[in-house]
Amino acid sequence: MLNVGKIEEGIVLDHIEAGKAMLIYHYLHLDREDYQVAIIKNARSNDMGRKDILKVECNPDSLNLDAVAFVDPGVTVNVIKGGEIVEKKKIAMAREIRGVLKCHNPRCISSIEQGLVHIFYLADAKNGIYRCRYCEEKHSYGERAKLFL
Image (tube, rainbow, N blue to C red; front, side):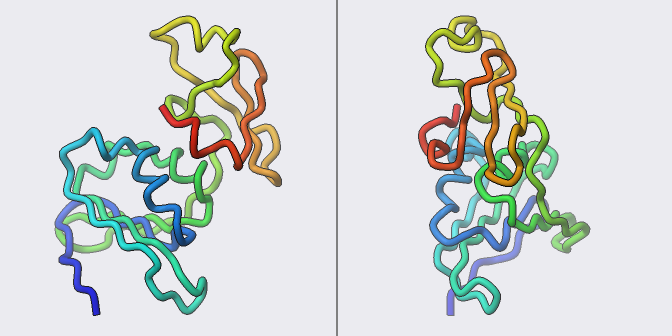
């Protein structure tokens, strides 16, 4: 049995579809931060068969959870304070995502203007399709791995 210690303050992302923890890790830019992170891949789950879990010791408000919903909207977020779960919530797909992905249209103003925040809106919730707020370029699930900022 694997034993990962508890965190005092931070978040635990549970019920991540197996194999998506590293993608979420990159979308949250955890590779650029100095947080303690535990990634558990292919953990046994009664409901899902296999799942990933991500534990991050940080200020819970410092992470853009819209990025998580973009990758896997079925994730459960457990907010930890004082070593205890103080809030547990399911993530839904955000209507608008800021600073998570970048538009791959070379003629889009967001590609030209360096300081412009990349903004996408949910165009089709059923199929998980987002569109660039500036040029309407479509971004769908299959493209997600290569589009994060």
